[in-house]
Length: 160
Image (tube, rainbow, N blue to C red; front, side, top):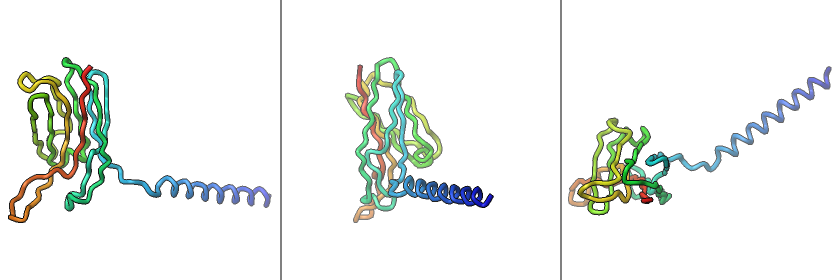
């Protein structure tokens, strides 16, 4: 009986050590998870992390993964853009890049998590890409305030 109890205690101790080591291994040196946007069109989905992500209070302290998504598109199907609540809770900007001209939309905090984007605009031409930006107000030496993006996500369209 003593051998069985000793063996069970040994197994429990070894399992605890292995579990602790596994948890330590999985959590060490883990980079912070940054928000991703998603874009869907014509049966294709792309999820992309930020191209550039800076601290709100220090826009010079940045992580630059330089990620850019690619999304195949056609002239018939619009792009469905989704942003996570981490972006939607803040004021955010959508930049639509068309062949002829860009279109910029601003969204107030908590108002939109999804936007439908036409791939062809009658005045601007075909959509070449989209970008989502989180602006921060900065002040220059003269005291003028203006918005500067502290984070940006980018998706390039690929025409079939």
